[in-house]
Image (cartoon, rainbow, N blue to C red; front, side):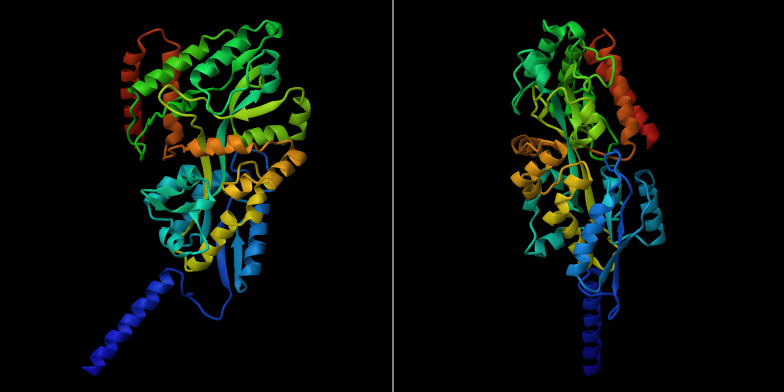
Length: 436
């Protein structure tokens, strides 16, 4: 009986030790230096030129290693963003996933589905010194799947409405508030096109597309997995009617993608990262500095809100990591350490998802003085409260191209929009089935 109790007790202790090891509370090895591996890519996540892609990561590693003696952090350099997903997949197949890795939005859902990423809810709940309230809520959704937090936000970029404020003033057009609507947007575009000062050719808007209109009108085009599309709704009908109105404006068609930079277009939707790159690039800024740039929220649709499409680069932990406690600490260094997050404004192009950083008046002054980029706290806060992460599922780009074809066909045809919606709904869903 005593031996049996001893065996049961020993078995219980071994099970407890195994659980603690799996969850990172006990190391796999003792008395040896721990090596934490990180998955990262070279270049800008925002498809912009960037020669400092590892600077933020390197500084975060230096800070982490000073605060965590006995732990070293390593990463493989030179992997491009285009190669990154394949590289991660190979590491998964080899059973050598990095302990911590960056997660582009277009692979987040598929990685969550196959169990690559560690559920972070337990770490968040038991870490007294950490709070999700540090971040913009909508950026957290970029790392959440089926009500589970799998990743923390590292950098983000919402779509803003960029304005030529000089052109608006010259045409006596009020600069829009953050809570403006489609009607106000249309009126401003119309006034730009018919203005008496339009001898040289002025245009209301460039590159306002179906993604912007659908977001503004709270359209849910696809189901969560991207396996079905509903193109028949009233909200889509209203969006198509509005897009049709825009195309019929005086001077409604811009002839060149560079016309905004030439100062003859009033509005252009642009990601914050692209806006930053355009303004702070010395050559671009010198060439097009004869008008004042500005930005505001996207105009609200009839049944929607001032919704901006949001892209969030997140950071996750491998579910197979042997050093989960250390991985969690490093994730916090990358995402919630102010000194690290402030470097986004020197070495990248997006916004920090950390509210205390992005809304810091001293940082805003620094960014404007050094780069000419405005961090408008009121606008950014308003936009981030209403932003929505795009539903990026596998094959999204191909299916979105099919939707673009549908919208272009409808806007270029004088037939019944309602009927065309039904026809294209069937075509798009058939296309989705072929891809699956």
